[in-house]
Image (cartoon, rainbow, N blue to C red; front, side):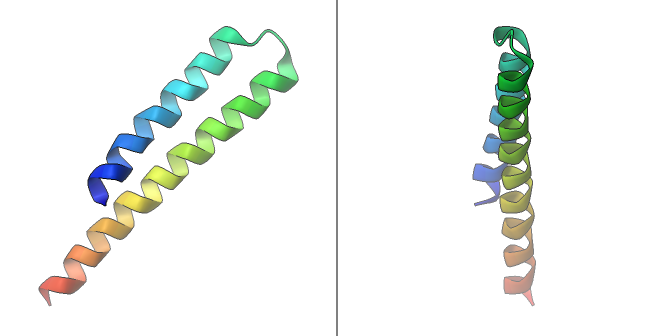
Length: 59
């Protein structure tokens, strides 16, 4: 699961960059950037939880 989280984080980053470049309207751009940041946050959560599970299994 931690690898899935590490793959999702760049997807959120590129989603935010694409929104800044492609959307001329401020409201649409803001909504898409917030969605991109949410995707990045989900990737961080998945990666951290993957590392936590791995650590708890070793004990």
